[in-house]
Amino acid sequence: MSRLGDTIRAARLKAKLTEKALGKKCGLAESYIRDLESGRKIVSDEQAQRILKALGVANPVSTELDVAAEPPVKLRPKPRAYVLPVEQQAENARRAEEESSDAWLDALGGVVKRVPVMAPDGLVIDHVLTPIVGGKIEGGAPDKVLYYRCPDDMLRGFRVHAGDLLLVVPAAKVEDGALMLVEYRGERTVRKLMKLDGNRIQLQAFDHEFTFDVAPAAEVKVLGRCVTLTRRI
Image 1 (cartoon, rainbow, N blue to C red):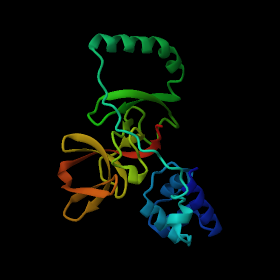
Image 2 (spheres, one colour):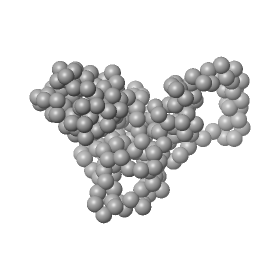
Image 3 (cartoon, one colour):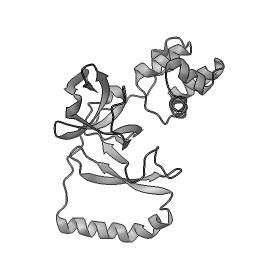
Image 4 (tube, rainbow, N blue to C red):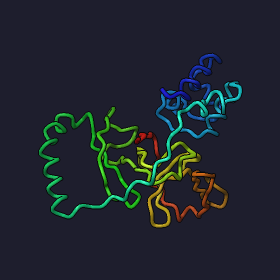
């Protein structure tokens, strides 16, 4: 569980509410509350405050969310650009990797998956062995999920920093308040999305200060929803 998940679960039990009852009170699905309490759901501060307020938790920002108590995350420089090796080097590396890992991965084929790590330009720059549970990875088909490596600190206000990996499951529609992988202005990027009137979308970033773009929905192609964060030190 996460610290926030523990807090919400403790407050819910103290209030003698079921996950379903709390979800109904907050306008959320029972499964959303369950995933949030287990630490499997990324949630915005605003959403967390609303849930805690519904549970009667006082001063959720500074006390219950423990934002101030989190250890500081040192700002890291923008990751170095990935340079593709020459064709022969790439082929040699691929063969060496296959020879050393094929037998082991065959034995674990139904348990783990080598999930690709993608850069903003769509290049696969690495792989991460990720567990498969019930035939799925965080609810997504194993061959459809991917990791997105954040290239900068444009999301650090949402606790996502340069070099961090976000696990992305397929999605085609905007989910209000969710961190989502989109194709926008010819580049793949992760932004917090909000639906606006007039079939427009607000794409939020938060580096030194909160910023956003507003674009027609037709100009923003949704590729997936970010479900877990892997911190890279």
